[in-house]
Length: 155
Image (cartoon, rainbow, N blue to C red; front, side, top):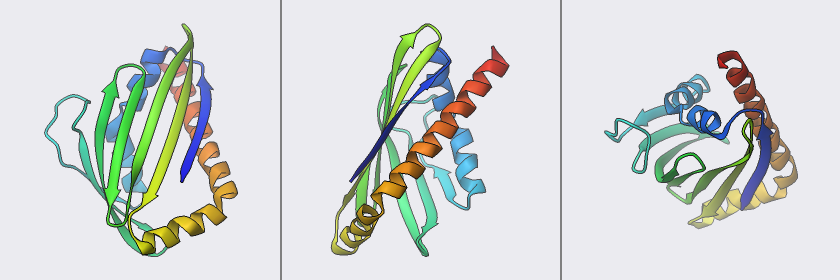
């Protein structure tokens, strides 16, 4: 199952990529929402091999996920692979410069079940795919607007 969307941002590609590399900010945001996030690699700068262990509640059950940065090509591409008991997938962010001050961000999330109970979970998600896709697109659009505002404040 796959979710994807695109947004255009009024900011240069380098600035957008730098904002997307604020991994500590993403960690804090997840913790504010109740997740436990722990960085498990020893890298000093963003790149391939970054890893996190994440524990969060979803549909009334605690989920454990391990995230790993598997592709990091500045300033146009990032790929995070995730794995949990029963599920695996990818989260990809692609950037394309439309002009000096405009960037297109394409984000996709792919979910693959690994066992029967996960297949049932994914099947229930497929039944709600329309509403989940709307929520996914809305969240990405909100974050894109936040990045635009942050860039305008800093520029």
